[in-house]
Length: 143
Image (cartoon, rainbow, N blue to C red; front, side):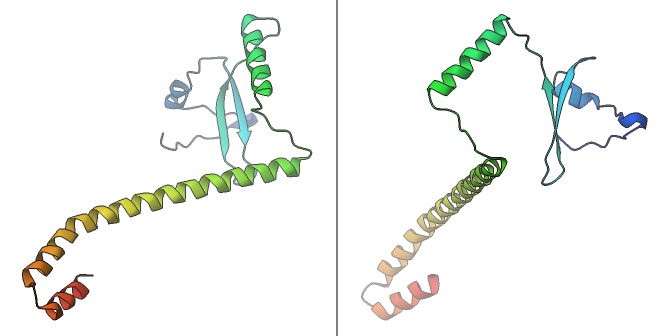
């Protein structure tokens, strides 16, 4: 989605553009969760829902949470600093994985390039035949 400008009015009010409300399936009086990224000041806007205790949905979500805890899909942190360090490490791992993927794509492109050019070089070298000097010079120039 492309960035959009909105004006902050009196009493800190703003109107969300219709493309955003449609994208988030927001209707009048819907709850919205807003989070501010402290590092860069970006806002994250999410549709929010209140789940009342004792409802079937609350029970399902609680069961899912307990299952995640039993299966070890959670992490505890002793301090906010430890949590921040965890996020930094996770982000660094993601950046490394993206870089590795980019390098793998570059290697694949180079391999495809050499596959296309290698047969021509070998054919020319075979055509030159017994004259090793000419073949070596050609191969050195081809590289």
